[in-house]
Image (cartoon, rainbow, N blue to C red; front, side):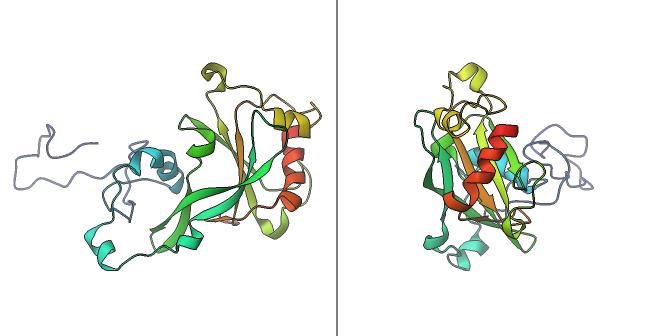
Length: 209
């Protein structure tokens, strides 16, 4: 990202135009920034989430944010997710942390799945219906499936939980831990997922995807 400390034809003139901020991930011009620290710019929520494992290490509340006091409710910092462990045979509910962010007056959640998936490059798929041609999920909610995309060369083992659930009929092998999170229809927030209600749609997804 270009800044006044770098070489620029207008860097030392009184008429210097302000460098246009750019996304920390793709460098696309943007005016949206993390409102928690007001220092990093992102063109979309997805790119903030993609960079969060790095950004959270130095993200601090701005003075104005600190003056308003805490905005988080400790009871709402974790959400139920379904973990498909690679080395086990049954899925289980786990609690996943998330951060609550505000941008352009809208509140959205940034899940933190690294504890279960690791810090490697993550893949994400979305489920919006009960089966490839089935009805929408209840309440038009959606399920995000998070997995490690580096499994071909990071030594991840086949996911025995998914193999067991699909009786070996999954469309392709899954490797490493897999995590499922449930989102509101606009995908801005995470909500508690249910093994009883949501596992059937996930099994259908693993069988057909």
